[in-house]
Image (cartoon, rainbow, N blue to C red; front, side, top):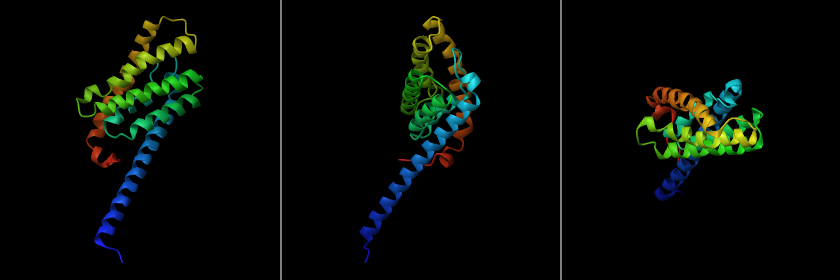
Length: 178
């Protein structure tokens, strides 16, 4: 016979299990959307001037921690499917991971700070990948500027539009995961 204590323990285990499933589902959906947006916008997503529409999703760690692995895996797969070279796949994805982590850290601050970490991470990392991986003959400071402009458009402007659209429904869309 089940005791009240046993039932409470079973409920806790079930809730914990459900929250792990929700976390994985959110991460997988974010990764899938990132890949689709990267592949569909590939003509603009790679090169010295990058306007990667998927980077608008880097605002999502402000809503859920599941966005951190989701964005990393999405960027990794998007870079692979986009034909990127190995250093770009590795370091570009790590830049997205770092940006996502620090966006999560800033989640309770101003919404205008949320896109800053992915912008900064990409400004620092991507020009070096372009210079030493793709042998782009432009100066690194110039590529920092061009990548930065693309990131401000993608992660900043488009990201804040996404934030505005989702913030009204965050309790419904981003139920508590972990």
